[in-house]
Length: 325
Length: 285
Image (cartoon, rainbow over all chains, first blue to last red; front, side, top):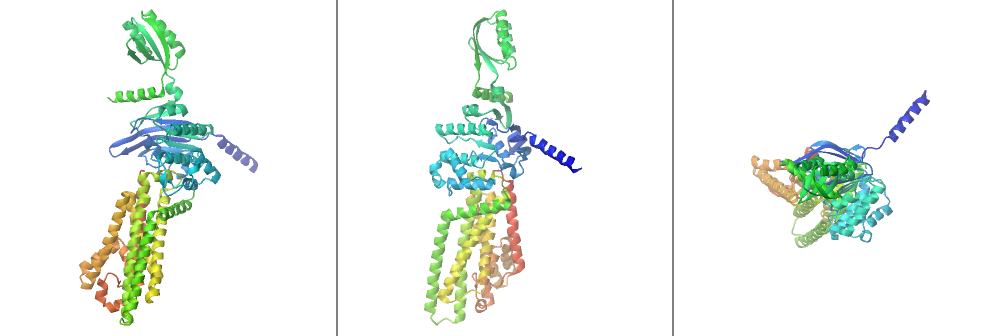
């Protein structure tokens, strides 16, 4: 009698163990109002395990508010947050979360070694001092390890903040503008650190103004505008949209209509830029060119073009502004 | 991370902060100067009175002077802790130091309790050590030893605790400097109200007397201070000054504290701490 029960239990345990772990961070329907200002309205997204997600958007888009709501530093008016499989209302959900705030400041009366020891202790993780020193060395502070922070520059404090975010063996690292006070060398270091986190399967949520950085390291991007998710998706999804530059003359109204039918058209003299649908790139170009010639247009040049994340971001934000007007 | 461990970690951090700030240096310097001056004063008193003062007069003078110096200490402790509580809580939330700490898997109430405990240990430690040093100086110079030194020092510590709890509550709501200024201002106001109440009592004016009673209920620092004075002073000192004069005199206390008042003071501290926790837990950082 007991043997089958045991077997069932073991099978159930195996089933649970085999279940894919929930996302590193998940939020749904987050809202926050400060006075009359609706800072965040209905924001939902997730960061998968081991995934690097970029949070982009103009100033005041609500990026930092969203990050603070994920970490329980700001209380949402509505919405749910789950971190590493636990509801964020439980502080234990943050046990394996590292955070570098946008406003990075650490106790000026402590040394970097003491700050890291404090954070390791508060996180409840068992990290030997050797590993803590490695975290300091990783951000280039090994030779200032025992100096008081009072005399540290902003850049050095931000480097320390990065070490604080990484020291307690996190499974999710939230970096809010991690390069704002760093020189180009420091920015390259941060990029390398994020890439090495991804290699180790650590999820990263990266808020940065530096779109180039985001484009280089992120798997997915969430674009916030005025407190809403304006667009979200993998870089391939967001940037996969191809464009075509065409040099055309003798364009009849029918040919112009055929162009507009394909996608969004921008014109500069005789040069036209047409956005192509993502789904049938292979047939769209020959079909379009054939139709244009049949409609009497003279085709001088056809050049494929790929848009950058920056152009895409600006396009999304301008479209949003246009829609509001 | 267990809550107890969080509380102790934060308390130790707060103590370390206090010990590394200039505040400690300033506090130590003021205390040493005060003890040295009072030691010199007491020794002059002993030398010059020679035999002209009766032993009763000497006891009265020693009691008054001891209470006066102790008032100085409680003032230093009030200033010190109130101006530590502001920066350590409001200052840290304003500057962003609290952001990375509170993003750790800890409860805000545990963080607040740790800060409070560290401040209580610091403030109480200061008044008890300084007070004890003062009592020893008085014994060495004029041979006076207070009737209940332990109770007196404990009440001084309780007074400091009450004031810093108020400073903690204020610092969850207003800026670091404002919280210190308001806390010390209220402390002074309560003391003045207590003196006014004592004058009312000696004149037999019930409504003036009520000023002191009401203020002692609203902010128990003055009530606890009067209890401490009563335990420091010689029991016969009041008799010498006369009952009415004793009530009006700000550095002698007419009556010991009642257990119900002590219970009220404890409840007051718990309530104010609870308000501070409620305000801090709901705060958006």
